[in-house]
Each structure stands twice: as structure tokens, then as C-alpha cells.
Image 1 (cartoon, rainbow, N blue to C red):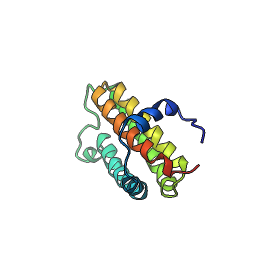
Image 2 (image 1 turned 45 degrees about the vertical axis):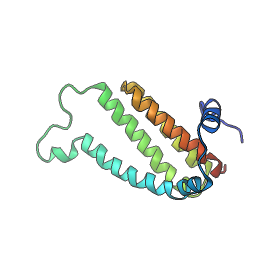
Image 3 (image 1 turned 30 degrees about the horizontal axis):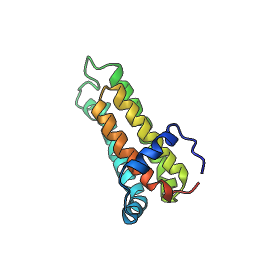
Image 4 (image 1 turned 45 degrees about the horizontal axis):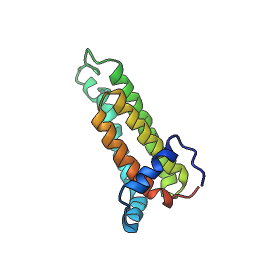
Length: 145
């Protein structure tokens, strides 16, 4: 299986060689139930985005975006929407154990790391990258092309 995703070849030895491996039972649990957790969390994220846009508060006459919030706010919302779309698109292929679903999760983690870096959330970027890629590389073998 040839790796074609950005940084995948560089990250593989780190997350498969230097981090402790998951047991077969944990991998199977994540592959079997993970898509449903992602779907539920994605639906909750839709409500979060609606709130971020102030749609709920608009009915009360409150402003959608407070004064002084600028480019970073809108960029983080756009990257959040992109990530959410990737998670939702990954649901069906993940259930079918197709590599395309894994690839979408990989890109979603990358976008999340970039989003945290743009917002200058270095700790968030590090934690998100380490946990996200560790889990992804542990379950990658369960997804066929």
C-alpha cells in the first residue's frame, strides 16, 4: 500500500514505532463504533456552529458576532465547517471499512492542527496532533483500499 497523503510517510514511524500499540480489542472497538461516535459528535458540532453564528441569539435581538472579533474568528469557523464536512463524509466509508474514510479523518486532523496553529493555540495543536495521529495510525490497518 503506497502512501500518498501529505506527511503520512514521515508520521508513520513515529506513531507506529515510538508510541505504544493498541490491543486488537481496542482497535476493533474503535473501528466498529468509532464512526457512530464521530457522527454523534458531528451533529453536536452543528449546534455549536449555529450558536457561533448567533442564529439562536438572533431571535432575541442580540448581535451574531460581537464587535472586535475579526479574521481569526471567521477563519476558525470556516476551518471548523471544513472539518465537520470531512467527518460527516467519512461516516459511510468508515462503516464499510474503506481507506477513503480513514483518509478523510487524516485530513480532518491535519486541518484541526492547522486551525489551532493559526489561532496560536500551540498546546491544542500538539495535543490534537498527538492523540489524533496516534489513534489514526493504530487503526489504519483495519481499512482496506
